[in-house]
Image 1 (cartoon, rainbow, N blue to C red):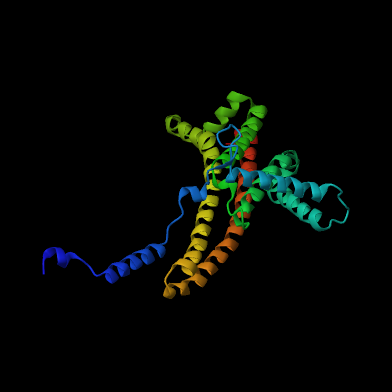
Image 2: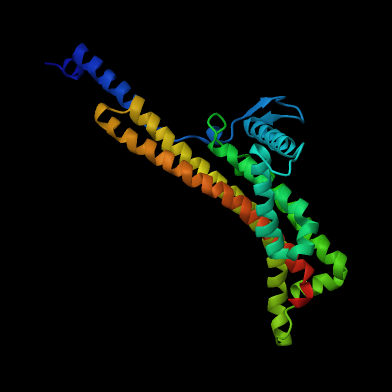
Length: 282
């Protein structure tokens, strides 16, 4: 038998190899790409008003928040019912557990509108991460967390500058009292970075990272469920209930994270305002 003849394979063998190759490719699990997390523009593409899926989710949840507050408080009753009861529970929580607790009753009443706006904005934008069909929080991208952090940054610096004046406020914020003069060379840069750079940075990254991580975990759990059910070999289908249960359990955990991130963001904003009000007690 010649080398040329020996190198040839039977047509049935070639067909079997192609079938195995296709089956193997079909059974591969492909991790989601970045376009799955942040889809390209879907409306007004190429214009300054370009909107992608994440922006549409953000606009939708903003409209839902406005509609909720309008319907809850458009005709308040002495004995609240339904939406008014839910809305008042949220407002009372922000007032008593954040504003009054951190700022005191007088200052808490003054800054309640700002703190409540931040709390409910973060809460509703986060909540879209567990709504079927939306499946992602718009806080999972840096834009909105950065805007909220800048608002908090402007608020607490405005409070401090208004009370003490710019230079006194800056000095009180970065100069640690009752330390040896030589230590100021080290402590002043540390205090400046901590107060005026790390605060907005950590507010932004904490919110974004938590919501993005939660979204990725949910995508992986439910993508794995789809893979096990429809693409994997028969013996691997037994894993689909476990990945599905894992996804449902993590959804419940994500609900807790959604609330905690709104609470932490609003709480830290109140704490930073309180620190600015008492900068001379540094």
